[in-house]
Length: 137
Ligand SMILES: O=C(CO)COP(=O)(O)O
Image (cartoon, rainbow, N blue to C red):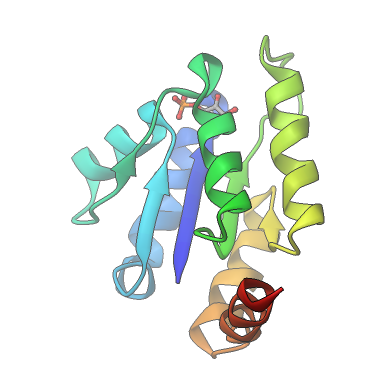
């Protein structure tokens, strides 16, 4: 199972704190991240992140493509709700694809903590079943 980690600039410190707090769990999964988020996580934790482009340069769309190919099982996207983003259409497209493909997405720290603990308890294992099923159709 793979997790996408994305944070807007004002939320990056929160993302680093989250990654440090849950490093033991996150280590068990494949991690993907947008450019700057991924770099900071790798610089400031022992986690290895498959880095894509920076969000404003298409990184959100790359994560979206991975969702379409069923390669992402959980998205932690710490959005900044108080700052307008030039690439807002890309952000909305990513969230829409999570809905299309039934991928859980946490957009704030409170939901991120609930999802990561659910993942750790095996509550997202239905994703594997779903992937197998959708590959058949
Ligand atoms: O802008 C982002 C998500 O929309 C995040 O991109 P970075 O991780 O490159 O800052």
